[in-house]
Each structure stands twice: as structure tokens, then as C-alpha cells.
Length: 283
Image (cartoon, rainbow, N blue to C red):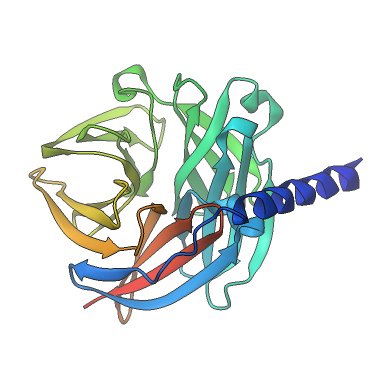
């Protein structure tokens, strides 16, 4: 039975790859037109694999972790990628337990690595009871999930999550004017940071040097990364990348400090054609 399930999962991925590649767009290199990022590397994957991590990216420095979904088919997955070679070393297709899926959860968003675990934003089909799913980073096995407390739900969208210093940060996807926080210890509500402007279509986020960077996918050729000062709430358009077309999507974002400087890892998706992890250094 297990081998039969694996077979159908492979057919599932390949079938959607062939179907959508017929109409998919091939992306152009993403040019930085505003901000101090310098392109470094790009890992590209055909949609037969890339569907499994077309929403989010995280890293521990050795591996990339990717999350993906096809919402209307209740397909969710998490993968582990060797950051040095780009090889996908582990898949966990249909990564949400059946009991969780039966509660309506259908959309894994952007994810975060923290202390050996992967935390992934997750929405229910009708945006009820948004939650954070937790996986083991070594095995990619599902561990548990936590429904957002009532005061932190907003409109039910939770497109991304990041974890810093035992605090969970997230926003809603549209009409975003505040950053919300949870205590990692018990996922209780820890407060809000009011932003000084409203932004929209947020798809990913991570924190570096006291600033929250929010990736957005506004439907135009140019995709803005917003910078939110976590002390003052001041929000500015810090980075703009031109994708070469309007339908290549900007999704997850992970930021990592190295001995040589800070790296921004963006997850971009050429519509149903390929998934890319693009790495930039801060000039």
C-alpha cells in the first residue's frame, strides 16, 4: 500500500507539471532596480518537483527547507535541499496528517527554521482558524500545530511566519498595517507593532538587524520588499526586483548572516513552470 501511495504522489506531481508547463511562463532573471542587493546564485527546479515548495523557504545554513501547496486539491508538502549542491535530499508529500486536513487546512505558506524545527504558516480553506504547523527539520515529520489566538487572527490569512528570540512574527496577506507576535513557549498572543503605512499582497518575511523584511507579490513586473522598523513601525520600500513579467510570483523570503555578510534568499515561481531559490548578497 505504501508503495502505491508513493507512485500516485509521483504521478500527481508529474501530471500537474505537464499540464501547467504547457501554459506556464518562463521567467527572466530578476534584476534589482532598487536597494543594495547583488545577485549571487539561482537554483531552479521544474514544477514536477517545485510544486512541493512553491510557497516558502527557510534555511539553517546547511539546508534550504521549502513548503508548498496546491490549495484546491489539499496537496501540501515540505522538502529539504542541500544548500551547497541544490540537490533535493528529502520529500514529505502530503505532509499534513489526515486529521488536520479534515479540519479544513489546505494551504501551507512561507516557513521558518528555528532550533531544529520548521514552522510553517497555514490557512484553512475558508480562512477559519489560521494556524502554525510544526515539523522536525531532520526528518520533515509533522510534530504539532497551533491555532492562532483570537486576538491575533485578523482576516484569517497567514501567509508567512518567522521566529526570532523565541517570538513568532507574522502578518495577514492583504491590507497589512501591523505586525503580530506570539510567544513561542505557548503560542499565546504577545502584541502588535503598528506600521506607519498599509501594504498588501505579502507573501514572505524574515528579520535582520532589527528590521522585518516583507516580500510582496503585487501583480506587476516589479516586486517590492518592504522594510519595517520593529521599534518605530516605519515602513519603506527597501528593495525592488524586476521579474521581467507580471505573472512570475515572489513568494517566501529567508535572510541569513554569514561570515562574509548577509544573504537574502527569495523563492520565486514562474507560473506552474519552475520554482527558483534566488540568493542575493547585501552590497
